[in-house]
Image (spheres, one colour):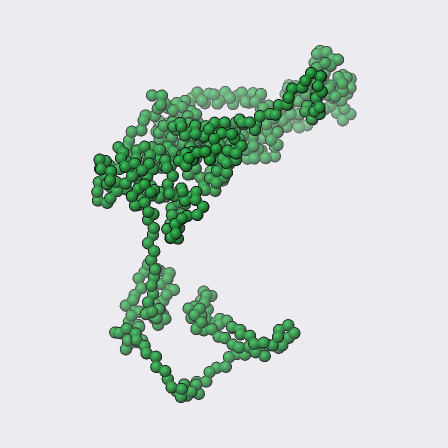
Length: 594
């Protein structure tokens, strides 16, 4: 009964998916909706698997710095399995709130701030125990140290000097250690001091009557007198007495100088009504996190001013009224809720009764039989071959499964008991796989968080993508040049899934080469006689190239240079060089000489 009773402040597991690990949340409020259901307002905690790799590196760096300063068990003393499981116990606090149905609660857990004086093994020895030391902001993706850290340890202790012997003088400079502001052995009596304080209050009330801004804030005499009776006025009066060696006449003359009476204000008077409302709104959102209050709500105020106003605000009637209202709201809200144990079967269970094939992670076409473990694969976490219940885990194409114990560990802690091959690749600086295709595929699986088969299961090799190569024949290359009008390579490339009409290309090729349409292309090169070549050149004289002559100068010697003039006519419509230009068919080279 007590295990199923959940109260405000409990750390609980929430299930939002049948295959994903539980969410860890802290109950802040329990509200009953109009339909009668109970919703829980919770604070979110994140696991290492929920944040980016960059932030994980920062978290590991912070953990190493803490280990170097602490005197407890360091990570080097732990085994690989303990290091792996310890990462599952680390959480990251956030200030994000969300509302979840109370019926999704699956149990209680314990979350505590990392205690530096306690060994990290204590978290592994306890079930359902987690720790955190950093705060994660999901909106800006940052990690910060928790400001509520309890400073326990040798580096936070004060250095106590040795006790002075009798008659030994203190060589330290007292002015740097403390400042004297009051002497209890003064010549004035308590009655005389009280009378001087009354005079100081009267001067403060008169000064507020003369001040325009104060008369607007305190329009009545009672409000002005109450403001003049605050501690700031009394502190100023007592400090004035001490500075004038408890001479009443000299101290009174300082209270009322030539310019008028002295007006002393504290933060309660300096702040406006709008600033006070902003502070109350920020306090409701952030609590006593004064840095965030100053950054998001009151950036024009100093941190000292905000803290001083907070402790003065707690003495006002406004604070008392808000405290009463919150107490009344808390009385009307639920303080605890009973959630029965969730007993519905998980959809990931591997059995023949729920309609799923029993051959998950086993041979295709067979059913899983517990009495014969050879028909199925081993557990991906503990490598066990027998279990009273099996659960499918990971992507369906991987066909992995977990035993009942490892499945419960996966749901609670968000990982496997033993490190997988993908996690080993993240830790290793360089992969050992020689095949680059296998190495790239394995790194891609590790980046996406996909499970990779361990060596304890059969067929543990990674399933790589089969490589293929396009082999283009000489006839295909020739057809691309001959049948340009029908082929239209640019249009075909824009629609890669539309088949090319090879019959039309073949018909065009047959028309142009009718004599070779039914047989493979066989060309025999016959060398023409020299007389035919000379006759052809006489009939078709070659064009003279354009010769560009440059005047000799002192800087450029008269030497022959080969210049290539760009053929702008060979550019395509899109301004790109075509096939002929790239293959040197349209290049024009001219020889430049003096």
